[in-house]
Amino acid sequence: MSKDKYHDFVLAYRGVVCMSNTLSLKSDVEDILIKALDSKRDEHLDYDECVRLMRSRDVNLIGKVANILKERLYGKTVSFINNLILNYTNVCITYCKFCAFYRPPRHSEGYTVSIDECIRRVGIAKELFNIKQVLMQGGHNPDLGIEYYESIFKAIKARFPDVAIHALSPSELDMIAKVERSSTKEILSRLKDAGLDSIPGGGAEILDDEVKRVISPLKIRSDEWLRIMEEAHMLGIKTSATMMYGHVESIEHRARSLMRIIDLQKRTHGFIAFIPWNFEPNNTELKREGLVKYSSGGMELLKMISISRIMLYGLIDHIQSSWLTNGIGMAQLALHYGADDFGGTLHGEEVVSATGARATTLTQERIVNAIMQVGMRAVERDNMYNIVRYFD
Image (cartoon, rainbow, N blue to C red; front, top):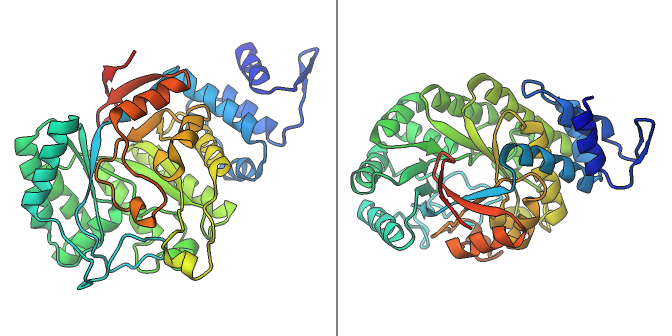
């Protein structure tokens, strides 16, 4: 191990005994963390090491190492994006047990936002908040064909060309393909021509079909999610990846899910961000059935953020702090545990708000203040993580 990496680890570990260049440590993951600090960018940790990190209770040390890796890339800079969430429909036929947002077809509370109304909302958000991105996600609505999405994308690009369209998870794309009796590759190609810039990582949850059979039995399987993401990457469409943890999955399920994302990224290099977020059980079928009673909490978030940074170092550059499901205070802490991005302002968000957990919109001012309160520098970014504004 180089002298600099040795010094990094000593700084990361409080309570270290250093004699004659040897370390006497109590951590059960010391070897993994030293390897993470000392590794070259083309050397990555494996599944067994991921499981050991997830089983470890040494969250603070794991977090300190993750923060060192993050600061090598970004120093004290933390990004965010001004964006609008456009939940265009809550009509859905996959009936996921973790979702409090969806309504079945013909339900009295079901809705689909008209094309004109979608454009109006984007226009208002552009005027009021100067948004750089519209994040468009909704239910799996069998009444919506591809023309609906193409019309919205083309209109956004015609009227607001500097607003990026980050839209439609792989499971939504699969639904469109089924409605059109077409391939997902053809759907992706048409939507790209209409103005689609990038794809969010929804529908991944845990990329293990044992878990999916419990929480989302009617949604696409893990291999299909990965296939659609690979198709997008091959068409030059960048995407994000997500993990929804803290429900019925095991540590091994989480590790396998993360390793599958790593394996795809090594082939395509198409993921630009990773967002781990905890399941919120309120108003969901999983809670009503007694399968999940409580959310997993803040310490689990910090561990997952830290492990994500360590496992994805040199592979996926950006880790979001997940304020939406954990609140501003935990998101601030996450910035010291490997996260470099605060996420978006999320004007208009309806999915998490359906759980009743917390407010799901932040202003630019609140995000900037939250970042600066923990001694870091806030920067506004665009959809591809290019910096567009610095805040002093």
